[in-house]
Image 1 (cartoon, rainbow, N blue to C red):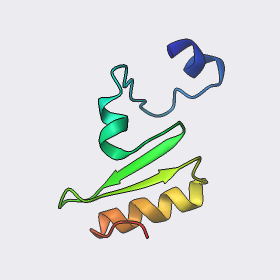
Image 2 (image 1 turned 90 degrees about the vertical axis):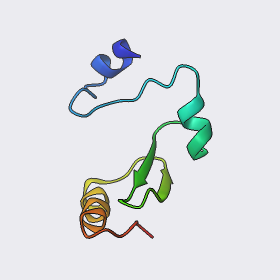
Image 3 (image 1 turned 180 degrees about the vertical axis):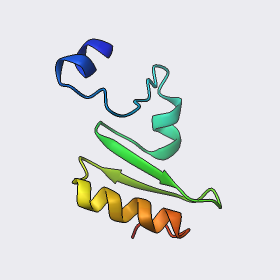
Amino acid sequence: MQDFIEEFGLDSFPHVNDADERLFARFGVPFQPAWVFIDSEGDAARVLGSVPEPDLVAILEDLAADRLPS
């Protein structure tokens, strides 16, 4: 995994190594890339696939305002 991250220059953000697949199973993540956003109440929203930067910023702003992305 680390070789892949380094090869494609993906080291500017944290990655989850879910070797036993428990985290993926908990949030219904069938593949990568995938994002799971969790609000202050513990509610989760899953986004499968890549997220363009403007969309990611909007999602994070929603979370900062304590709203899950729609």
